Amino acid sequence: MTQNAKEPPFPWPVKWKYSSRSRRLSLRIDPRCSGVVLSLPLNFPKEKALLFIRAHIEWIQKQLEALPPPADQANEILIEGKTYPIVRVPERPSFRPKLCSDKFIVRENDPNELARIEAFLKARAKILLPVLAKKWSEIMQAEFSRITLRDTKSRWGSCNTQRAIMLNWRLILAPKAVQEYVIIHELSHLTHFNHSPDFWALVENFCPNGKIGRKESEKWLKNYGIKLQRTV
Ligand SMILES: [Zn+2]
Image (cartoon, rainbow, N blue to C red; front, side):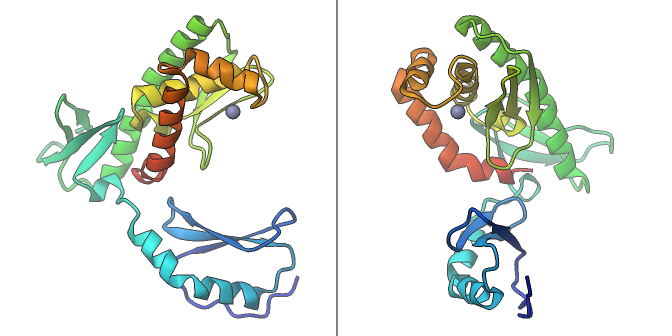
């Protein structure tokens, strides 16, 4: 593949994703790095691709400007579906973020604020999500072999034929009903390893509020997915 075109200095990072499965050009926003991902067919001429990006500059800027700020640049944080004001107080350097009933306290002027918030959220996810998965595993009589928490870009959960469940730890930011939906979804895959009508019937049988509950959770993840990816 020859790439003669000089990369123009766009004000945001561009990830070039060549794939034999791509039939056409497509752009999407990467909320993690405040940049864009360009998917394109193998051997697609770079000059043409650059023209495509240029034609979408306005759209890209608008999307990037609309991204929510990371927690250390925000005055509130979403935890388990509830928005807490972030209160920054003078504290000793070893102070760790603390969640109270009505606020989230962090040390002011902490150069490691974002890393500390991330550690707090991950630790909370590690305690609460496996307990919730165990609870639903018993209710559904669907036993899993192990559970891991990961930071995946596009999936909230997955499972494999060894009956191991994976959950995205960022679900700790979502309401409990949404966490439960993802867990019920993955546990249902232990019975139906597909998305067949039988699979959805099983999911909806256990989802609080059935089909409506399932749809509400899916909608929540669609609306807040970027916020979950951007918080830390
Ligand atoms: Zn699925």
